[in-house]
Image (cartoon, rainbow, N blue to C red; front, top):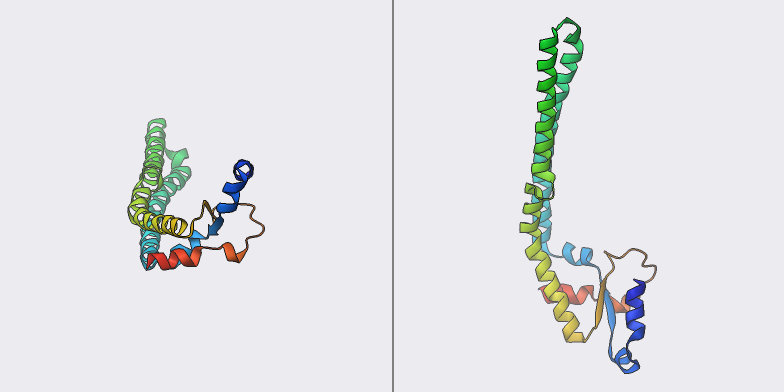
Length: 166
């Protein structure tokens, strides 16, 4: 943020008078896009489904462990080892399942990218168009910035971007 301010102040005086800065709130913009709401609802439903599946498998691992704890004194050393290995295998399976659904390369990340990236690309193109049409040099996204304590509503370009999307 400081580097950005330094960049703006380092511009020649005539460039500063011709340049304009504004901001958008992409959360507000995305909320106005019906496809975004549909996509997020699909993602939430899918996430719940996968969470339920992982929870069910985790419950199975917990049941195996609890049964083992109750019975371990009556088991032979060989039976205890077999049960412990079964529990460890089940826990590893749950971990792999969770990773396959929710990891960086998981199903949810791929689905999120497939559903949301085209919408975000459209929003970015609309922002670019507004910036070019109204001659803005810099447009900030206040939904992504931390520490914004004041933003003049006259510099809010969100409604222009929403109109450009329609």
